[in-house]
Image 1 (cartoon, rainbow, N blue to C red):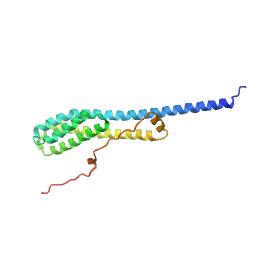
Image 2: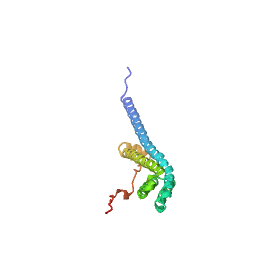
Image 3: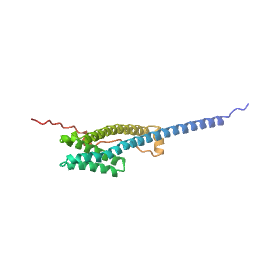
Image 4: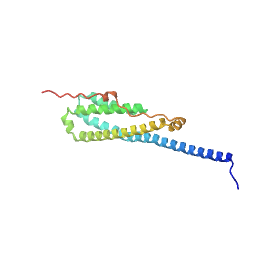
Length: 193
């Protein structure tokens, strides 16, 4: 009978432990890759909606220009925010540009309240509804970006995932941020008669 020696048993056990550890490291790596790609996918989904909004803004401004002769500043803010987006290259710059567009659209829709003829214009109403729908969808997608980035950031900081993450130089991802002014309480004043 051929009996294994103690050295052979230790070698087999060591080999099995190494195979298990390598397999576990591969599983961790693959799950981190999936999380990282989910963040990129979520950003890409936002980009699709942002492109649609980007394409709709000139139409909205064009409809408003005929009615809002004295509100050039508001229309210029929308145009300026739109051009900021064209030059944005980093995630932070894109977030800042998107927040600027959102803020300028809020201002535009607030000013529109002073123009009953514009509010009644079918093209404006259609474009306004389309922009509002896109804004709602963008907000939903931003939540997805934050959820994906949060899961990824947690995983790359947890043990044993941190070992693989540091080995492959995985960096934490930025969550979507709003402008600090958007956190302030809204002041509502009613006109007195």
